[in-house]
Image (cartoon, rainbow, N blue to C red; front, side, top):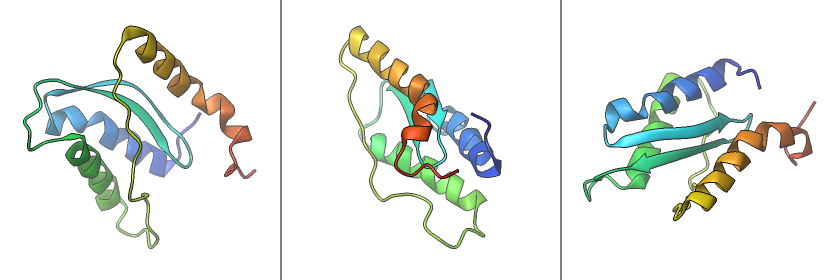
Length: 111
């Protein structure tokens, strides 16, 4: 999938997460036209920096770069899932990497 200008901003902000949170490692991710999928590994996280802080910081960084956008960019909520074993990790990675091939079946797809 080729990213437009907005997608490139989202990608840049996603890749910058470890610069702001050194204890976070990025795994696979994909930026879709209307959402983002990504895996983060959190190591030795201080209790005052839960996942919500990381996601909120990422969303705020993207929003800052798009100040001219008049409508809300993000949903208030996000979905998270704790990966508990290698089989689950592999299944989720495959889902994320395969998501672009499913875009045409998405209810929000518009040609």
